[in-house]
Length: 317
Image 1 (tube, rainbow, N blue to C red):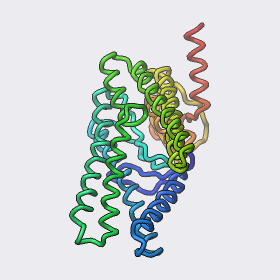
Image 2: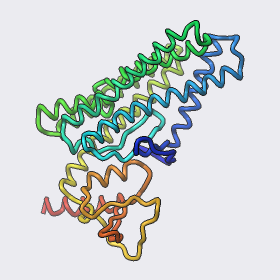
Image 3: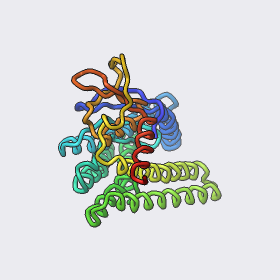
Image 4: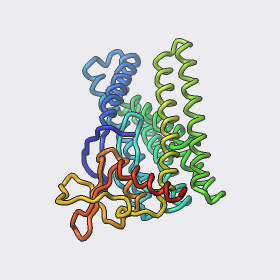
């Protein structure tokens, strides 16, 4: 899902990364806000309008980060390791193996994100309402706009399509009812693909009704959601096939390799589910395996594919 990422720091012990695609959306959001401010407050002037737009963009992405931090904090309180948060073109993603703790944990971790966005929406909305007459008109109006955006973000995330938060809530409910995470993931993924295709259709409709910009956004978000749902289901199938495998089962041996500061390192008894979550963050193409502090092997996508081929051959032989 992710390309090149930059680590920008840690919050409450959680690593925060920015995907290269985030720079595109930040520029687009800032420009969109600049035009909105210029139309609504023509007396504002170019410099102040651009500065306020940039500040509002930072507050918006700060809201997205707060949404993801809510996921991360609740996950850690449930004993789930969190491998970091990545901000990218279409929002943010929290990297944590929530599935390992069962449907109840997934329901709680998923639900807290939209609830946080609703809280932020209320806070910004109240700031705009009570700030009217105290703060400059443009600032109060921007706060009110951010309130609407956060509420919209919460509502969108509650759509029951995987991998949105609402899709994860749906999966947790089906998982609880059927006892099968594979079946639950399939149901949620189909819902996610359906929502994605509907958004793409809406995008095409907007393009033909003289709203091309809105249409492009709807189509892009729909395409991303459909692809993400398909990929998420494939990843769940992969994790099911790996079963109880640990790093030592999958690693390829290596000699003379020493772990560097930027290398991702796991113990030889680390589950492959945890290893995959590290590979999927986009920050590394390999994971080093250690035993008593000594590097004894490494795992990359080719090693996972090789193990699966051998495992499938044994099962069908």
